[in-house]
Image (tube, one colour):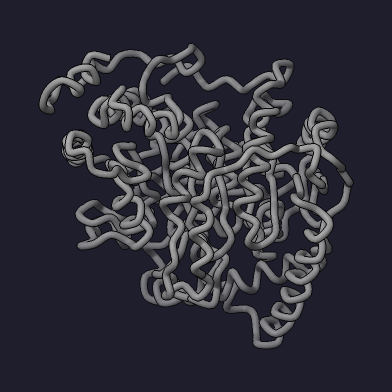
Length: 502
């Protein structure tokens, strides 16, 4: 790479952007934007590649793909190049580099970015430009990342389909007529297509995990407090967490290492969170005890997804020390989720629904109105149920290291469809019910990694969810990384193919 050679010999300069040409997502790529983030970070430190070259490569890919997919809704090329040149200059000083030094990154549009529009996907914030970074954004900026854009989401992150009245729909890169999932859909698409090396997301009922599964990437939902949420309107509602999205487990761990910190404003943050930055050690899967369930005993799951999952687990089962088909007792989980989600939405958006209803999307209104139907007896009952579920989950993971289940209950569906209203000819009680595979472990305070594992019966990305107990983040990531290596060796399992019309 000529620029990297130049960097080793002389002062920093700039070069013209590479002309935008056609992009074929199914041919081997030598573009820098397709490197794993961990590899790119190593090469930056070695001065084999430069932050400017990386930024140019990502911007070129944005130009090739984003007009079709609509993943990045606020793009600041000038700021991205300026920061990249700063990071390149810092390479020459010989001072210690941050964890993410020089790596291009985009931020989910529900976290404030200083000087860059932050809309939450809402008409109410269409022109909102914050004066300062959200604390979670500051962490990754201070770690040396090159923030150059914001990614699309359903309004205020409410929903499993990334569409809003402000920016429209984000499309699945494997079929642009289908949804990429939500709410971190724009982030997942940007990572999957090489528009960025890393992206931040957030997760309540599957907002990191469903898009990761639908787009064929890795997403990780940490234990509450690991990546602190210090700006939540309801501090006692810990289920909405920040987390990383990347193309590999190591990439997710790298970003999470920058996101993890102790912040006393988050009631669930502890000083032990920093342990997540420890290197991921190799794990012998023959020492791992695994619980397997196609539906967690509580979730509606499409029959074809169950069949694909069972076939995949036959491939994996011989890798582990022990495998047992079982799941924790999630009885009552739907009531727990609905009540506590209602409380969180009333706290965060109740006033907006009362005063600005006409400017809000239906998902936000539906969540608030559902919450307002509950009474104190419902809340008390939900608290009792939740306490039992949480404690029984802890006991369950005394006997198992991880539990594996499908990452999503259905294949990606048309993005013109607001949500999944029927599974196996059974009507769903509400617009969140199809996400029970994700929200059940959420309510038990679990942590979870989603790994891509070939394609489903429709040829679309299929993912599995590797779930651990509260606080088992490091263990889950290590096991997920070992599984990732095993999956990569399964040459007989076809990978999904991206659409070729970008």
